[in-house]
Length: 125
Image (cartoon, rainbow, N blue to C red; front, side):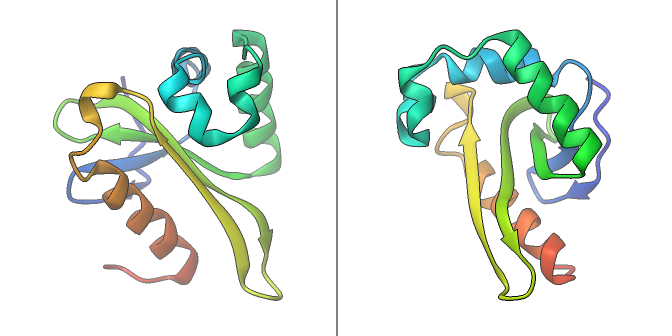
C-alpha cells in the first residue's frame, strides 16, 4: 500500500482515507472481535458498498477518520477517528479499532491514539 504518511508515530502512521481502505474496513467490521466493542456494528452486516460510501463521505466532508498503517511493513491494520467534534466546548468522541488480530496488544493503538489527539492540539510529541 502506498500510504500517505500524514501523521507519523513510533510504530504506525495515520493515513487519510484512500481507495482500497473500504475493502479492509468491511472485512474488519464483519469480524465479531472488532464489531462487538464498537456497538451496533455487531448487529448488522457492513457491506463493501456501505464502507465505500463512508469513505466518500469522509473525503468530501473532511471527517477526522484515518486508516492506521503499520510502519514496519506499510500494512493497513485498523482505523481511528474523532466523532461529534465540538470545537467550542473542546469535546469529541474517539473511536479506534485494530482490525488485524495479529497486531492487537502491540501498542499500535496507543501510538495511533497519541497521534490522533496530538493532531487536534497542535502538539508535536
